[in-house]
Image 1 (cartoon, one colour):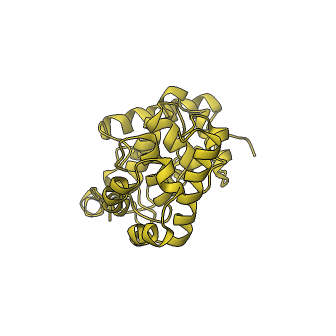
Image 2 (cartoon, rainbow, N blue to C red):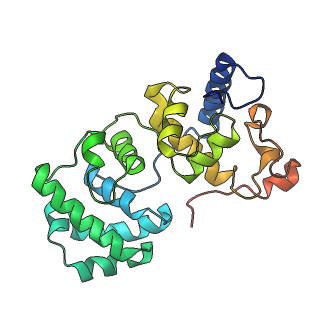
Length: 239
């Protein structure tokens, strides 16, 4: 099975051209695409991204103002009262595990990184609750270091686009990274995620109004009639 050639009869150069054209269309469609988690520092983004696991950005943004006002440093998380922290983040779900991760993250930052969020992937993924997806969010949006955020939307859309057959996030990250210029990886991730939240839904994507319809091998997965498809389009913030 050839890598980066999942669409029947499509050559590697043709795939690259199609992927980059789709990226340009997404850029035109979502000129304001950005990280939808609210944050004011690398630490705040790291915390918000940990909380976003199995939770919407909208819900996280409802919780973090109180959280960020009380916990301002890695030291604050390291020494947090567990019961109090759990109560603040309870509505994000899995709050006990997330509290463990936040306390452990604060302790690790204090013990190994001088209380600062590290700027390297290999360091970030050693922190409790942090995998490559979270690390790429932090690197790309807090430090300007390009990274692809392979979340559920990204996985679904890049498969529908015919860009990859992989199911492992690391392999998806590698294959898609070969198609899109590295300098655009972070903003491209936002564009894909925005498209997945607004038009290319898991169930009944709004194919009839999709700006990528002419280039997408999965066109027809959802309603192709523009009037029907238009009813499926969503706008943020997402609940």
